Amino acid sequence: MAERRSARVVQLTSAHFVFDPRIFSKISKSLSRAGYEVIVVARHDRDETVEGVHIAAVPKVFGRLHRMTRTLWQIYKRALALDGDIYHFHDPELIPVALRLRLAGKHVVYDAHENLPGTVSYKDYLPKRMRGTVAWITDHFERFAAGKFSAVIGATPPIVDRLRRVNPRAVVVHNFPVPEEMLRNHPIAWEHRPPVVAYLGSISRARGIFELFQAMSRVQTVDCRLALAGWFEQPGLKEEISKLPGASRVDCLGRLSREQVAELLGRVRVGIVVLHPEPNLINCRPTKLFEYMWAGIPVVASDFPLWREIIQNAGCGLLVDPFNPDEIARAIEYLLTHPAEAEEMGHRGRATAKKLFSWETEERTLLDLYRAILNEHTTPASDLLNAREEGISTCIPTR
Image 1 (spheres, rainbow, N blue to C red):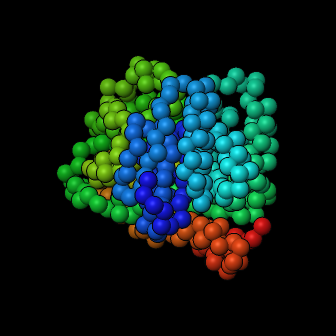
Image 2 (image 1 turned 180 degrees about the vertical axis):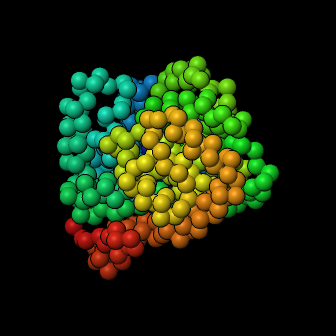
Image 3 (image 1 turned 45 degrees about the vertical axis):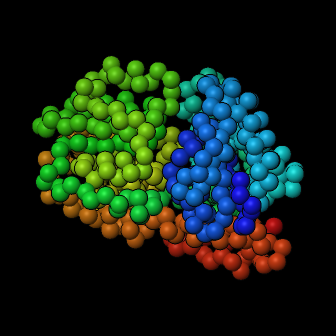
């Protein structure tokens, strides 16, 4: 590693892909552009530097048990040796590692991507009778730990509202798209696009994959296809859904690069996000929704109150019952058979996304937080930050 000339930020993840969009494309690249030395410690096959971000690899392992034991110890040793000025971690399973770094006198930032106790209800590997107890333990442990860290970042306001009770230095950094990524490719003219709908991101039962496959089998008036771009959360799920009605209309593309995502969304006609109303999902702001909007395609989305407000205000799509494959099929069919209206919905969605849902605003919040942490002994953090738009405050009081 070259001689240090700027503040060193060490990003830590044990569960995420090293090039995860939030960790790498947004947070790490934003910090690097701002002059920080950024190192991502993650499971990877080699050390390398990509687009100005250093990757410190720990060996890949298979199985949750090995990841929760061997990988965590390897990440801790690698992280401590790097002697970062700020450690920024992204997985709740890394809380013990983060607490040890905090005890060593390090600045530590917890990035909560999800409302952790709310995820327990749809963890298939947990017996249902245990989920209430596990959620209670998870809630108390996470809040205990969050109060010890230098700062907390949450991907949505409800996450931050919950953790701000134990750590007043808590800010919202939404997972909004990076404009340059979404606009780098020239999209295909609408009249030349095939009847393809797209789904991006994590694939699971709770994210509506079974209903989506069934819906594809029930679209009657047009021969459409589903481009399924993402990764399967549960072992064996891919084989299970391959036997469902509608599977013959699905193209499984796997995990795509950011360039491939932009290319895909530039040639399809509809974006799908039909998550189930689980506690952790009903109030989330899914990145895929905003990527569809930035790409200028209409959306078919679960009829949740928060999503309804976004989609109806923008006039950019149709709302459905995520448990009703027939309703999902009718929405897909309508958008594919009304191309002029669908294209106009896409235009409205893009205009709204450019105005309200851009990473540029979130980047400013992130950089303000980092300056506040590094200057907390010389400059009051409250002087560095201003209130955010949309009524979401990111003012950070000193602790």
